[in-house]
Image 1 (cartoon, helix red, strand yellow):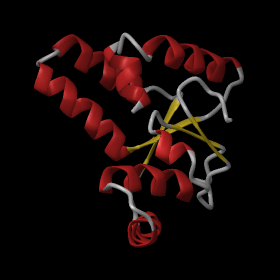
Image 2 (image 1 turned 120 degrees about the vertical axis):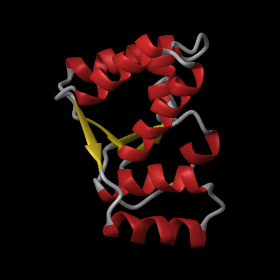
Image 3 (image 1 turned 135 degrees about the vertical axis):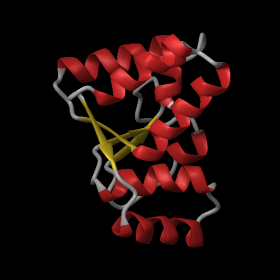
Image 4 (image 1 turned 45 degrees about the horizontal axis):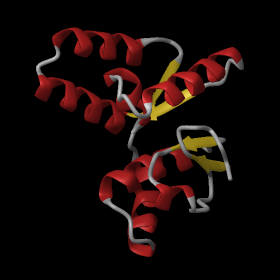
Length: 133
């Protein structure tokens, strides 16, 4: 998940994610994520007992640059459709359903299987390098 790469400094993917994040800021793009994604990041940092990183992550997700999307009834319907029609993990389906419900222009994932999907409500699915094809 790109927020983990961004906030935990994944050696392989952090540079591409930082570059993508900076480009999004330049374009004044609205950055959205699910409450579930926030929970995943916080869980990882709590397991690592990384108090300083945990504080930075909370500040990052609390900033006005980030919109935290809920998992509501409409999102649950999309999730159920995804899980019943595609071979997809529950966490992936939560992320994708949340993005689809928000009618996201760009969904970023490192999962190549997900990059190949066409999901109603999501305009483009790309890798952390930002390349669409």
